[in-house]
Length: 106
Image 1 (cartoon, helix red, strand yellow):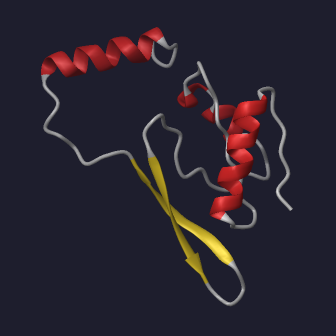
Image 2: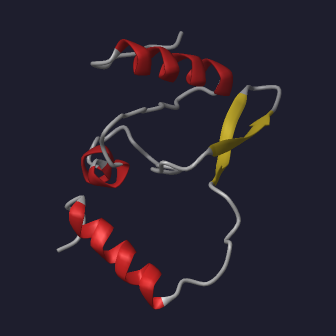
């Protein structure tokens, strides 16, 4: 059975449906709104039952799933798109500012 919890009915349903579509045991899905995943990673990593985090992103994601006679398992994820180029100085400044704005870097 897929278990769920949360504080937003829409996001709970989205997580439930995504977990159902992934159809792999011992996995969990978190959706959040108006928050940055990177700010929650330390707390999630601190949960003893968490062995691996495949991604924490606002990018589109596709899962890579394998199936055997025993069941299904997540092998990895495709996180976002292919690079469009090489970061320039203006991009670096914007990225650093953004990380400071969300409280991830000083």
